[in-house]
Amino acid sequence: MTRIALLGATGSIGRQALEIIAAEPELELVAAASGSQPLDGLAPLTQVGGDLTELLDRAQPDVVLNAVVGFAGLPATLWALEHGVTLALANKESLVAAGELALAAQERGGGLLLPVDSEHSAAYQCLEGRHREQLDSLVLTGSGGPFRGRTREELEDVTPEEALAHPTWSMGPKITVDSASLANKGLELIEAHFLFGLPYERIEVVLQPTSVVHALVRFRDGASLAHLGYPDMRVPIAFALTYPGRAATPVPPLDFTQGLVVEFEAPDLETFPLLALARRAGEDGGTYPCAFNAANEVAVAAFLEGRLPFLAIASTVEETLADVDGAPARGLDELVEADRKARRLAEGAAVA
Ligand SMILES: NC(=O)c1ccc[n+]([C@@H]2O[C@H](COP(=O)([O-])OP(=O)(O)OC[C@H]3O[C@@H](n4cnc5c(N)ncnc54)[C@H](OP(=O)(O)O)[C@@H]3O)[C@@H](O)[C@H]2O)c1
Image (cartoon, rainbow, N blue to C red; front, side):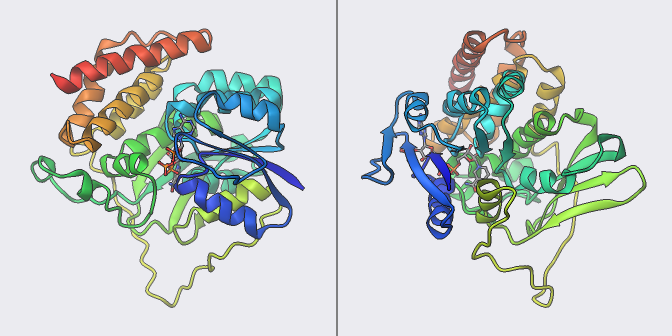
């Protein structure tokens, strides 16, 4: 039996994980957590809000599925990595904000870090068992979100409702807005850098509007491997929870007779500046990725509350990045302080 702690059990990933766990006899849910919604005996141990590492200390799981949204997921990520407990990571924000600290914790703990983000799960599968020197580059794909093809003028007055209407994925509100702004691809770029140890110039982002190709890996001999499947998060969730067993899921294999369309295009970096801002924050290193993430969380919340126009998400992040010093964090306290400072600056930029 694999004993699972599911953090973010009431969310989009959390609910799909519950379905996978219920269908797979080898998986046992021993602990579940949410931010504020009740859990009503969902698991033997439950916790609503508070310090999730207390729940993990009590549960001693084999696998932590971290499906909390935002920086709030960081303590649980570090707990799993430090304790050598397999971490199935959906909470990309924690790895983006604390990449160096997380990798150092993993080095000490010696456990597995399995991505649940579909692109990174796909890349992980394409890269598994390969020698690093054979590799040329990694390609992350994105649908482009609901606003693909629009001009900046056409984005001036878009509403949260429009941003939340994603064409291919059904997800929680924060990541759906991130998908519409391409901040999500930016977060994923930084996530991939830390997960796979690749320099940023060897990670490319391309759009593939039907979300059938999740990632590609190019090798030095000119060959590329791609990971394909219908866009359904139950596949990467099940992959991570049952690794290396690859349990069956209800998701059907691709049907090539049903008008499958696979086309690629370059992202429009002028209209959607957050992808380039994330790349620069990643390349600048230190706590710039942490500040990128913090400012984006603040700006997305303000947009969802109707306090900030869609295009101001990017300008808020840009102004925040210009105002922080980005100095590397020597420990968790300094990282938390960098996050707090970036949030303060972003709040100021968002109301200005
Ligand atoms: N959804 C997807 O398809 C998808 C794909 C790839 C990656 N991801 C990543 O997975 C994570 C979760 O995404 P989601 O779409 O599932 O989000 P979501 O639907 O908004 O769910 C978020 C979950 O986190 C919980 N939560 C929020 N703050 C918390 C806190 N302080 N302590 C404990 N729990 C807290 C929420 O609990 P309450 O319900 O009580 O607020 C909820 O269970 C994000 O990092 C996202 O980027 C999601």
